[in-house]
Image (cartoon, rainbow, N blue to C red; front, side, top):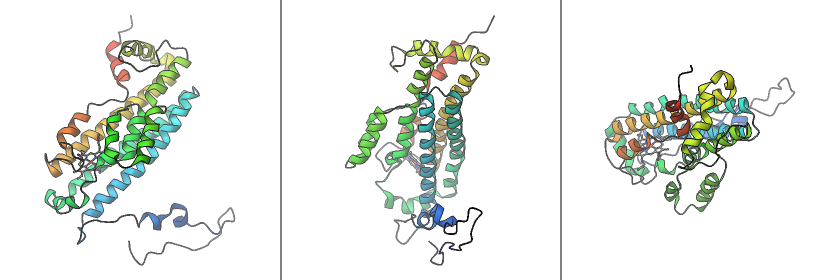
Length: 278
Ligand code: HEM
């Protein structure tokens, strides 16, 4: 942090008569700017980029989670357009997250190698919030908990997400509450019945416009998460090639295998079931 930076403490009364709250107090900017602690010694110039880009993502992840939790609660109250409003905001954030990853390509592969060993064995596998986003969306894979050994508080948080509400089943329950003929249990046996339950929305969008908008915003969310995965793996290939990950995975090969994951597979499959109206 710039040692001369003190933050602004000028106390000018605002229209509400408050004098004591400054931009820096409100946003905790001085605190935020002290959180970039490099591990390399002597400090490698590019490590600042590496830290800040990850921190920026974690801040956006926090907001995405905040919005998705709200969307789920509106689904529970059958407030379709309110739920759509907050999913849409999460989508706009995710659109921004996709191109952001490419800033890392301004780092030469050889320069990354100069400080990579200092972050080992920290890994993206340990991004709690990324996993929470997956779980909250409906992609609940408990095998990822193994990356948090010796962190019982994180395991507890992820277990709560695993057992808690999610967008995928929240959406099925919403449709059921609105009178659609749809199972709410997400099992392989129910797969086709779920798709058939959703089908009227896609067969006749104009008759179900708020639900159609919500459904498509969920598909947008899936699409941009998937695009983030695609862009991340491209950057990884470009920077470390096919080296193993610091979290112990095969690296690019593992990441490529995640790009076909879907949070809302039924909303993708329903298109295959549509018929041209007579
Ligand atoms: C030079 C830059 C980067 C490299 C070389 C890299 C490399 C990797 C590798 C190899 C993995 C697989 C897990 C492992 O074995 O460690 C991984 C996973 C992951 N990375 Fe990155 N990464 C980079 C940048 C980022 C950024 C900027 C983010 C933003 C948060 C990020 C988030 C993640 C997440 C969330 C995972 C887990 C993905 C999953 O399991 O589906 N990575 N990364």
